[in-house]
Length: 407
Image 1: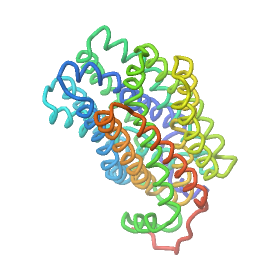
Image 2: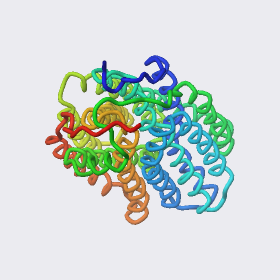
Image 3: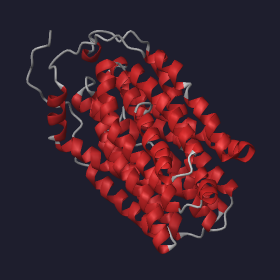
Protein backbone atom coordinates (compact mmCIF):
# COMPACT_ATOMS: atom_id res chain seq x y z
CA UNK A 1 0.00 0.00 0.00
CA UNK A 2 1.14 3.52 -0.71
CA UNK A 3 2.75 4.81 2.46
CA UNK A 4 1.03 8.16 2.26
CA UNK A 5 -2.38 6.44 2.18
CA UNK A 6 -1.97 3.95 5.03
CA UNK A 7 -5.20 5.29 6.44
CA UNK A 8 -7.43 6.71 3.64
CA UNK A 9 -8.48 10.32 3.80
CA UNK A 10 -12.06 9.30 3.15
CA UNK A 11 -12.15 11.47 0.00
CA UNK A 12 -12.18 10.53 -3.66
CA UNK A 13 -9.59 12.07 -5.97
CA UNK A 14 -12.37 13.42 -8.18
CA UNK A 15 -14.10 15.13 -5.25
CA UNK A 16 -10.92 16.79 -4.01
CA UNK A 17 -9.94 17.90 -7.51
CA UNK A 18 -13.38 19.35 -8.22
CA UNK A 19 -13.89 21.22 -4.94
CA UNK A 20 -10.22 22.22 -4.67
CA UNK A 21 -10.17 23.46 -8.25
CA UNK A 22 -13.30 25.56 -7.75
CA UNK A 23 -11.87 27.10 -4.58
CA UNK A 24 -8.59 27.99 -6.31
CA UNK A 25 -10.52 29.30 -9.33
CA UNK A 26 -12.47 31.71 -7.11
CA UNK A 27 -9.59 32.77 -4.87
CA UNK A 28 -7.00 33.26 -7.62
CA UNK A 29 -9.51 34.62 -10.13
CA UNK A 30 -10.57 37.54 -7.95
CA UNK A 31 -7.01 38.64 -7.13
CA UNK A 32 -5.79 38.55 -10.72
CA UNK A 33 -7.99 41.52 -11.60
CA UNK A 34 -6.73 43.87 -8.88
CA UNK A 35 -4.61 45.77 -11.40
CA UNK A 36 -7.81 47.15 -12.95
CA UNK A 37 -8.67 48.90 -9.67
CA UNK A 38 -5.41 50.88 -9.58
CA UNK A 39 -6.46 53.74 -11.84
CA UNK A 40 -10.05 54.30 -10.57
CA UNK A 41 -9.08 54.05 -6.89
CA UNK A 42 -6.09 56.40 -7.00
CA UNK A 43 -8.09 58.84 -9.12
CA UNK A 44 -11.03 58.83 -6.71
CA UNK A 45 -8.92 58.93 -3.54
CA UNK A 46 -6.19 61.25 -4.82
CA UNK A 47 -3.44 58.72 -4.04
CA UNK A 48 -0.19 57.94 -5.87
CA UNK A 49 0.54 54.66 -7.61
CA UNK A 50 2.92 53.81 -4.79
CA UNK A 51 0.06 53.94 -2.26
CA UNK A 52 -1.94 51.33 -4.16
CA UNK A 53 1.19 49.33 -5.00
CA UNK A 54 2.24 49.23 -1.35
CA UNK A 55 -1.13 47.74 -0.34
CA UNK A 56 -0.77 45.07 -3.04
CA UNK A 57 2.79 44.44 -1.88
CA UNK A 58 1.61 44.01 1.71
CA UNK A 59 -1.06 41.63 0.43
CA UNK A 60 1.57 39.39 -1.14
CA UNK A 61 3.83 39.59 1.90
CA UNK A 62 0.94 38.81 4.29
CA UNK A 63 -0.03 35.89 2.05
CA UNK A 64 3.50 34.56 2.30
CA UNK A 65 3.93 35.11 6.04
CA UNK A 66 0.58 33.54 6.87
CA UNK A 67 1.13 30.64 4.45
CA UNK A 68 3.25 28.41 6.75
CA UNK A 69 0.84 29.00 9.65
CA UNK A 70 -2.16 28.17 7.46
CA UNK A 71 -0.30 25.07 6.28
CA UNK A 72 0.47 23.94 9.84
CA UNK A 73 -3.17 24.39 10.85
CA UNK A 74 -4.41 22.57 7.75
CA UNK A 75 -2.04 19.63 8.31
CA UNK A 76 -2.95 19.41 11.98
CA UNK A 77 -6.67 20.29 12.20
CA UNK A 78 -8.00 19.87 8.67
CA UNK A 79 -7.82 21.93 5.50
CA UNK A 80 -11.57 22.60 5.42
CA UNK A 81 -11.45 24.64 8.62
CA UNK A 82 -8.64 26.81 7.24
CA UNK A 83 -10.54 27.25 3.97
CA UNK A 84 -13.63 28.51 5.78
CA UNK A 85 -11.53 31.06 7.65
CA UNK A 86 -9.92 32.08 4.37
CA UNK A 87 -13.29 32.66 2.70
CA UNK A 88 -14.51 34.86 5.55
CA UNK A 89 -11.29 36.90 5.59
CA UNK A 90 -11.49 37.32 1.79
CA UNK A 91 -14.99 38.78 1.92
CA UNK A 92 -14.04 41.08 4.81
CA UNK A 93 -10.96 42.38 3.01
CA UNK A 94 -12.89 43.16 -0.17
CA UNK A 95 -15.55 45.04 1.81
CA UNK A 96 -12.93 47.16 3.57
CA UNK A 97 -11.09 47.74 0.29
CA UNK A 98 -14.32 49.17 -1.18
CA UNK A 99 -15.46 51.30 1.74
CA UNK A 100 -12.36 52.94 3.20
CA UNK A 101 -10.88 56.28 2.14
CA UNK A 102 -7.72 56.12 4.29
CA UNK A 103 -4.50 54.55 2.95
CA UNK A 104 -3.78 52.72 6.20
CA UNK A 105 -7.17 51.01 6.42
CA UNK A 106 -7.03 50.32 2.67
CA UNK A 107 -3.74 48.51 3.26
CA UNK A 108 -5.34 46.60 6.14
CA UNK A 109 -8.18 45.39 3.91
CA UNK A 110 -6.56 44.99 0.49
CA UNK A 111 -3.21 44.04 1.98
CA UNK A 112 -3.40 42.21 5.31
CA UNK A 113 -6.88 40.65 5.28
CA UNK A 114 -6.88 39.54 1.65
CA UNK A 115 -3.30 38.32 1.97
CA UNK A 116 -4.22 36.15 4.96
CA UNK A 117 -7.31 34.97 3.09
CA UNK A 118 -5.27 33.84 0.12
CA UNK A 119 -2.88 31.90 2.36
CA UNK A 120 -5.85 29.87 3.55
CA UNK A 121 -7.67 29.41 0.24
CA UNK A 122 -5.10 28.64 -2.44
CA UNK A 123 -2.42 26.18 -3.45
CA UNK A 124 -0.59 25.21 -0.26
CA UNK A 125 -3.74 24.14 1.58
CA UNK A 126 -5.29 22.37 -1.42
CA UNK A 127 -2.02 20.65 -2.32
CA UNK A 128 -1.75 19.25 1.20
CA UNK A 129 -5.08 17.44 0.76
CA UNK A 130 -4.13 16.30 -2.74
CA UNK A 131 -0.77 15.03 -1.51
CA UNK A 132 -2.54 12.81 1.02
CA UNK A 133 -5.22 11.66 -1.42
CA UNK A 134 -3.40 11.14 -4.73
CA UNK A 135 -0.79 8.42 -5.26
CA UNK A 136 2.82 9.70 -5.62
CA UNK A 137 3.07 8.83 -9.30
CA UNK A 138 0.05 11.05 -10.07
CA UNK A 139 0.78 13.98 -7.77
CA UNK A 140 2.47 16.13 -10.41
CA UNK A 141 -0.55 15.69 -12.69
CA UNK A 142 -3.01 16.46 -9.87
CA UNK A 143 -1.04 19.55 -8.86
CA UNK A 144 -1.12 20.64 -12.49
CA UNK A 145 -4.91 20.28 -12.60
CA UNK A 146 -5.30 22.43 -9.47
CA UNK A 147 -2.90 25.04 -10.82
CA UNK A 148 -4.75 25.07 -14.15
CA UNK A 149 -7.94 25.80 -12.19
CA UNK A 150 -6.33 28.94 -10.81
CA UNK A 151 -5.39 29.92 -14.34
CA UNK A 152 -8.94 29.29 -15.52
CA UNK A 153 -10.12 31.58 -12.75
CA UNK A 154 -7.92 34.35 -14.13
CA UNK A 155 -9.20 33.79 -17.66
CA UNK A 156 -12.84 33.89 -16.55
CA UNK A 157 -12.67 36.59 -13.89
CA UNK A 158 -10.64 39.20 -15.81
CA UNK A 159 -13.46 40.07 -18.25
CA UNK A 160 -16.06 39.63 -15.50
CA UNK A 161 -14.28 42.12 -13.24
CA UNK A 162 -13.77 44.70 -15.99
CA UNK A 163 -17.47 44.35 -16.89
CA UNK A 164 -18.47 44.78 -13.23
CA UNK A 165 -16.33 47.90 -12.88
CA UNK A 166 -17.79 49.47 -16.01
CA UNK A 167 -21.41 48.66 -15.06
CA UNK A 168 -21.44 48.80 -11.25
CA UNK A 169 -18.51 51.10 -10.58
CA UNK A 170 -15.34 50.00 -8.83
CA UNK A 171 -16.99 50.00 -5.39
CA UNK A 172 -20.06 48.06 -6.47
CA UNK A 173 -17.84 45.51 -8.17
CA UNK A 174 -15.88 44.95 -4.95
CA UNK A 175 -19.09 44.50 -2.93
CA UNK A 176 -20.33 41.86 -5.36
CA UNK A 177 -17.00 40.03 -5.33
CA UNK A 178 -17.10 39.98 -1.52
CA UNK A 179 -20.32 37.99 -1.77
CA UNK A 180 -18.78 35.69 -4.37
CA UNK A 181 -15.84 34.95 -2.07
CA UNK A 182 -18.25 33.40 0.43
CA UNK A 183 -18.80 30.53 -2.05
CA UNK A 184 -15.51 29.15 -0.72
CA UNK A 185 -17.29 28.15 2.52
CA UNK A 186 -19.60 25.41 1.16
CA UNK A 187 -16.87 24.18 -1.21
CA UNK A 188 -14.54 23.71 1.77
CA UNK A 189 -16.75 20.91 3.05
CA UNK A 190 -15.86 18.91 -0.06
CA UNK A 191 -12.25 18.51 1.09
CA UNK A 192 -13.08 17.56 4.67
CA UNK A 193 -10.63 14.81 5.62
CA UNK A 194 -10.82 12.24 8.35
CA UNK A 195 -8.67 13.50 11.18
CA UNK A 196 -6.75 10.28 11.82
CA UNK A 197 -4.43 10.01 8.84
CA UNK A 198 -1.48 7.73 9.53
CA UNK A 199 1.86 7.87 7.77
CA UNK A 200 4.05 4.83 7.39
CA UNK A 201 7.75 5.15 8.06
CA UNK A 202 9.40 7.88 10.08
CA UNK A 203 7.02 10.17 11.93
CA UNK A 204 8.12 13.79 12.29
CA UNK A 205 7.18 16.61 14.58
CA UNK A 206 6.79 20.09 13.10
CA UNK A 207 10.16 21.14 14.51
CA UNK A 208 11.92 18.09 13.06
CA UNK A 209 10.34 18.71 9.65
CA UNK A 210 11.42 22.36 9.63
CA UNK A 211 15.00 21.63 10.70
CA UNK A 212 15.29 18.96 8.07
CA UNK A 213 13.86 21.09 5.25
CA UNK A 214 15.74 24.32 5.97
CA UNK A 215 19.00 22.43 6.36
CA UNK A 216 18.58 20.77 2.97
CA UNK A 217 20.26 22.53 0.05
CA UNK A 218 17.65 21.61 -2.55
CA UNK A 219 14.87 23.12 -0.43
CA UNK A 220 16.83 26.37 -0.22
CA UNK A 221 17.30 26.43 -4.00
CA UNK A 222 13.61 25.80 -4.62
CA UNK A 223 12.80 28.74 -2.36
CA UNK A 224 15.22 30.95 -4.29
CA UNK A 225 13.59 30.05 -7.59
CA UNK A 226 10.12 30.67 -6.22
CA UNK A 227 11.23 34.11 -5.01
CA UNK A 228 11.96 35.02 -8.63
CA UNK A 229 8.64 33.59 -9.79
CA UNK A 230 6.78 35.86 -7.39
CA UNK A 231 8.75 38.94 -8.37
CA UNK A 232 8.05 38.48 -12.07
CA UNK A 233 4.40 37.47 -12.18
CA UNK A 234 3.05 39.91 -9.60
CA UNK A 235 4.93 42.87 -11.06
CA UNK A 236 3.49 42.05 -14.49
CA UNK A 237 0.00 41.23 -13.20
CA UNK A 238 -0.41 44.49 -11.27
CA UNK A 239 1.55 46.97 -13.40
CA UNK A 240 1.03 45.73 -16.97
CA UNK A 241 -2.31 47.60 -17.43
CA UNK A 242 -0.72 50.90 -16.33
CA UNK A 243 2.43 50.21 -18.39
CA UNK A 244 0.31 49.74 -21.51
CA UNK A 245 -1.80 52.82 -20.75
CA UNK A 246 1.38 54.89 -20.40
CA UNK A 247 2.28 53.80 -23.95
CA UNK A 248 -1.08 54.80 -25.39
CA UNK A 249 -2.77 51.37 -25.40
CA UNK A 250 -6.30 51.26 -24.04
CA UNK A 251 -8.09 49.16 -21.46
CA UNK A 252 -9.19 46.72 -24.15
CA UNK A 253 -5.60 45.73 -24.86
CA UNK A 254 -4.89 45.30 -21.14
CA UNK A 255 -7.98 43.17 -20.66
CA UNK A 256 -7.11 41.05 -23.67
CA UNK A 257 -3.53 40.61 -22.46
CA UNK A 258 -4.52 39.46 -18.97
CA UNK A 259 -7.15 37.15 -20.44
CA UNK A 260 -4.53 35.60 -22.71
CA UNK A 261 -2.20 35.14 -19.74
CA UNK A 262 -4.99 33.33 -17.91
CA UNK A 263 -5.96 31.24 -20.96
CA UNK A 264 -2.46 30.07 -21.84
CA UNK A 265 -1.68 29.63 -18.17
CA UNK A 266 -4.28 26.83 -18.14
CA UNK A 267 -2.34 24.96 -20.80
CA UNK A 268 1.05 25.80 -19.28
CA UNK A 269 0.29 24.59 -15.77
CA UNK A 270 -1.42 21.43 -16.99
CA UNK A 271 1.48 20.70 -19.35
CA UNK A 272 3.98 21.30 -16.55
CA UNK A 273 2.13 18.80 -14.37
CA UNK A 274 2.25 16.17 -17.11
CA UNK A 275 5.88 16.83 -18.04
CA UNK A 276 6.84 16.66 -14.37
CA UNK A 277 5.82 12.99 -14.37
CA UNK A 278 8.13 12.16 -17.30
CA UNK A 279 11.18 14.40 -17.01
CA UNK A 280 13.41 15.68 -14.18
CA UNK A 281 11.54 18.56 -12.59
CA UNK A 282 14.70 20.57 -11.94
CA UNK A 283 15.37 20.80 -15.69
CA UNK A 284 11.75 21.75 -16.31
CA UNK A 285 11.97 24.56 -13.76
CA UNK A 286 15.27 25.82 -15.16
CA UNK A 287 13.80 25.92 -18.66
CA UNK A 288 10.74 27.87 -17.47
CA UNK A 289 12.79 30.56 -15.72
CA UNK A 290 15.23 30.85 -18.61
CA UNK A 291 12.43 31.23 -21.14
CA UNK A 292 10.77 33.90 -19.02
CA UNK A 293 13.94 35.98 -19.12
CA UNK A 294 14.11 35.65 -22.91
CA UNK A 295 10.43 36.52 -23.42
CA UNK A 296 10.59 39.61 -21.20
CA UNK A 297 13.78 40.76 -22.94
CA UNK A 298 12.17 40.50 -26.37
CA UNK A 299 9.02 42.28 -25.18
CA UNK A 300 10.75 45.39 -23.82
CA UNK A 301 13.25 45.73 -26.69
CA UNK A 302 10.79 45.49 -29.60
CA UNK A 303 8.28 48.14 -30.71
CA UNK A 304 5.13 48.01 -28.58
CA UNK A 305 1.85 47.30 -30.37
CA UNK A 306 -1.35 45.40 -29.58
CA UNK A 307 0.06 42.41 -31.50
CA UNK A 308 3.33 42.38 -29.56
CA UNK A 309 1.38 42.64 -26.29
CA UNK A 310 -0.85 39.70 -27.20
CA UNK A 311 2.09 37.54 -28.28
CA UNK A 312 3.94 38.39 -25.06
CA UNK A 313 0.84 37.63 -22.97
CA UNK A 314 0.26 34.27 -24.65
CA UNK A 315 3.86 33.07 -24.29
CA UNK A 316 4.28 34.51 -20.79
CA UNK A 317 0.93 33.02 -19.84
CA UNK A 318 2.14 29.55 -20.81
CA UNK A 319 5.06 30.07 -18.39
CA UNK A 320 3.06 32.01 -15.77
CA UNK A 321 2.27 29.46 -13.04
CA UNK A 322 3.91 26.48 -14.70
CA UNK A 323 6.49 26.56 -11.89
CA UNK A 324 3.82 25.65 -9.31
CA UNK A 325 3.19 21.93 -10.07
CA UNK A 326 6.86 20.85 -10.40
CA UNK A 327 8.01 22.91 -7.40
CA UNK A 328 5.39 21.45 -5.08
CA UNK A 329 5.82 17.98 -6.54
CA UNK A 330 9.55 18.11 -5.76
CA UNK A 331 8.80 19.17 -2.18
CA UNK A 332 6.39 16.22 -1.80
CA UNK A 333 8.87 13.89 -3.48
CA UNK A 334 11.72 14.87 -1.15
CA UNK A 335 9.89 15.19 2.17
CA UNK A 336 6.64 13.24 1.77
CA UNK A 337 3.05 14.40 2.35
CA UNK A 338 2.87 14.56 6.15
CA UNK A 339 3.83 18.25 6.44
CA UNK A 340 3.30 19.16 2.79
CA UNK A 341 0.96 22.12 3.38
CA UNK A 342 3.37 23.64 5.91
CA UNK A 343 6.50 23.14 3.79
CA UNK A 344 4.65 24.32 0.71
CA UNK A 345 3.68 27.39 2.73
CA UNK A 346 7.33 28.16 3.51
CA UNK A 347 8.34 27.76 -0.13
CA UNK A 348 5.48 30.05 -1.05
CA UNK A 349 6.64 32.56 1.55
CA UNK A 350 9.76 33.10 -0.55
CA UNK A 351 7.49 33.54 -3.60
CA UNK A 352 5.56 36.24 -1.78
CA UNK A 353 8.68 38.08 -0.60
CA UNK A 354 9.55 38.30 -4.28
CA UNK A 355 5.98 39.40 -5.03
CA UNK A 356 6.21 42.16 -2.42
CA UNK A 357 9.40 43.52 -3.97
CA UNK A 358 8.10 43.19 -7.53
CA UNK A 359 4.84 45.05 -7.01
CA UNK A 360 6.25 47.65 -4.61
CA UNK A 361 9.38 48.41 -6.65
CA UNK A 362 7.17 48.70 -9.72
CA UNK A 363 5.32 51.63 -8.14
CA UNK A 364 8.31 53.03 -6.26
CA UNK A 365 10.68 53.16 -9.24
CA UNK A 366 7.95 54.42 -11.54
CA UNK A 367 7.24 57.36 -9.24
CA UNK A 368 10.99 58.03 -8.98
CA UNK A 369 11.92 57.68 -12.67
CA UNK A 370 8.66 57.90 -14.62
CA UNK A 371 9.40 54.50 -16.18
CA UNK A 372 9.14 50.77 -15.49
CA UNK A 373 12.37 49.99 -17.41
CA UNK A 374 14.56 49.29 -14.37
CA UNK A 375 12.10 46.72 -12.99
CA UNK A 376 11.78 44.95 -16.35
CA UNK A 377 15.56 44.50 -16.54
CA UNK A 378 15.73 43.35 -12.94
CA UNK A 379 13.10 40.70 -13.75
CA UNK A 380 15.31 39.44 -16.59
CA UNK A 381 18.40 39.19 -14.39
CA UNK A 382 16.49 37.34 -11.70
CA UNK A 383 15.13 34.90 -14.28
CA UNK A 384 18.66 33.94 -15.29
CA UNK A 385 19.59 33.48 -11.63
CA UNK A 386 16.60 31.19 -11.02
CA UNK A 387 17.42 29.16 -14.12
CA UNK A 388 20.88 28.39 -12.73
CA UNK A 389 19.68 27.84 -9.15
CA UNK A 390 17.30 25.00 -10.06
CA UNK A 391 19.82 22.89 -11.97
CA UNK A 392 21.49 21.27 -8.90
CA UNK A 393 18.20 20.45 -7.09
CA UNK A 394 18.04 16.81 -5.93
CA UNK A 395 14.60 15.24 -6.36
CA UNK A 396 15.05 11.93 -4.54
CA UNK A 397 13.43 11.23 -1.18
CA UNK A 398 15.53 12.39 1.74
CA UNK A 399 16.88 9.48 3.85
CA UNK A 400 15.57 9.35 7.40
CA UNK A 401 16.26 7.26 10.47
CA UNK A 402 13.17 5.43 11.72
CA UNK A 403 11.33 7.12 14.59
CA UNK A 404 8.62 5.53 16.73
CA UNK A 405 5.01 6.27 15.79
CA UNK A 406 3.18 8.44 18.34
CA UNK A 407 0.42 6.79 20.31
